[in-house]
Length: 292
Image 1 (cartoon, one colour):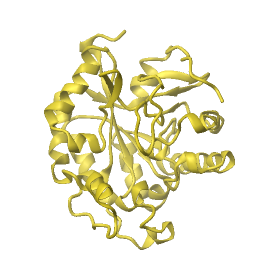
Image 2 (spheres, rainbow, N blue to C red):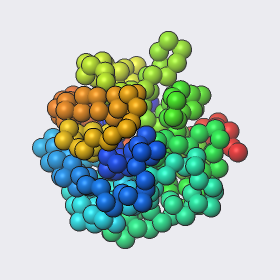
Image 3 (cartoon, helix red, strand yellow):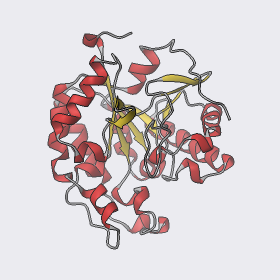
């Protein structure tokens, strides 16, 4: 077990643009993506500067679609010492794809990122954490495609994703493949989302910090925190026609996120996923997770 003083948490960024968010899919045709104003490169520049100022390294789960259009951005991520990982190619939920389609998506994205970045890509995160009880075959597909870890199963109950009974911490979900879920805090007999995203923007910063501290101190485990480049972009174009719930989830407190992230980087010790889970924990045991 890790001691409190030795715990490094994993900072992760899902590299996608605002118009690629799954909740906007009914309102934005995928064929229209190339006609949209892309803001991801500018936002990644801001994130890289923040990480450099805070002497922090992170893992960038990057869409192949984005990497193809902004190869210099990808090379800069690698050159500045961060881990390049895969978010698939076109931000399609794993649960919406057949096994053949999923294998093509994750294999193509991995090869593309490795060619552009000039580095091995070992990690994958499914868009919208879309691996769960109904498609655990995707884990075997990731292993076949050459990945060493996934961060795709969120052990929470949510209206769009989640596998509440899944293990909360890093575990060998297949022989040769580790699952590293986003962080949750066990309270009130349920898992509370504590690893970033919209919850980090919605909740008071002090509460988010306390939840992460509980995971470090009570559970003696590394936290996995995630956010998106569009979450620091208050000037992004507004999408018309979306319902109130989607609008609230996407835009709440966007203007405060960058400041909160700066505090978060000061309050905890952060690093790359591969350094924490593939190097420091090379002998994590195989978890008892159903194989289907």
